[in-house]
Structures are given as C-alpha cells and as structure tokens.
Image (cartoon, rainbow, N blue to C red; front, side, top):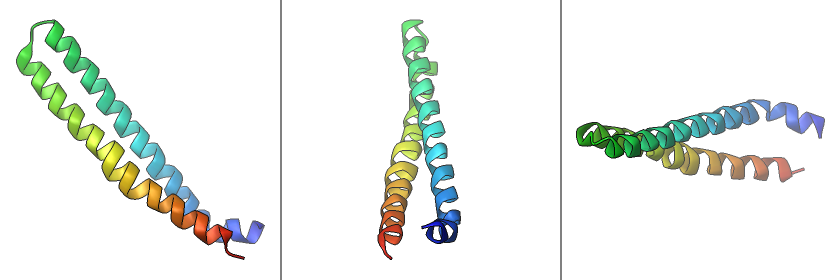
Length: 85
C-alpha cells in the first residue's frame, strides 16, 4: 500500500491543490455576490451589476471549470488507479 501511495503522490498533491483552488475561487465568488447584494441595498446599481458579474464568473470557474471538470474526474481516476493491485 505504501508503494502505491508513493507512486501516486504527485496526483494526490495536484488533486489537493486543485481542490483548494476551486474552494478559494468559489469563496471569492460568494463574497462578491454578497457585496453585490449590499450594493443593491445601498442603491448603487452599477456597482452591484459589476460585482454580480464578477461573482458569477468566479463561481463558474470555481464550481464548474475547476470543481466539476477537474476535481471530480481526478478523484475518479485516482480511486480507480489505487483500487488496482
């Protein structure tokens, strides 16, 4: 088992880094969306639109581009390779 983990260490490190990146970008997107709601409440419609658009882009990259397109396939591939003897 130790030999398997050491041979796949690069994949595991990449998976952890991509997962952290997806989480950070998603958190930034959520924060920008909350700022957009605050800007709407303050009556700053133009600022709110820009913050909303930036939040949508960040959430797209965090959730879809990294999360669904990178993290999930890497987890499946790593599980398959670790399950083989």
